Amino acid sequence: MKLNKESLQFINFFEDLTKAKVKDCFFNNGRLVFVVGPGEASRAVGIKGKNILKMERITGKKVKVVEYSSDVIKFVRSFLYPVKPQEINLNENNEIEIKADSTHDKGILIGRDRKNLTNLKEVVSKYFQVKNIKIL
View 1: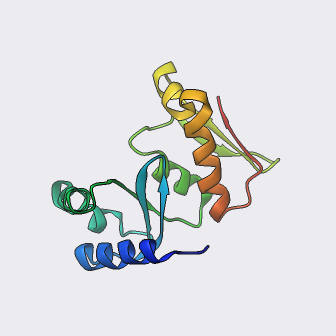
View 2: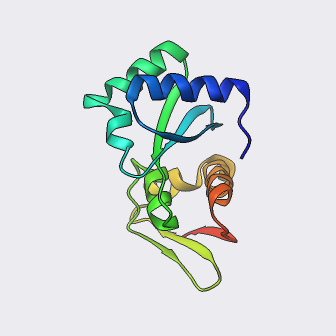
């Protein structure tokens, strides 16, 4: 994982603002994504989202906080929030299967021209050895 100067500046500013430990920072779908350590998400977001709102106001970019977990299923669930899939499994072929309970949620997970699904695959493969992600 390589961080450029801009990412390091965002990380330093975010850590000073929130007092949460940031593991990674990158742009995804036009959003600034901060991957914070386990148990740090609520501290990073702040009461009623005040830290996120302040960061968005200062940077002029949408901000998303994802809590890192060494468990791929917990990490995917955190990345997909606020969409709450019915079930997330890792099968024997090292593929993640996400079961959504409504067509609306499936549409959000897949995205126009499979953009959201492709972005999810890129982010997950950055941290875990996963062959594929399927939406059921």
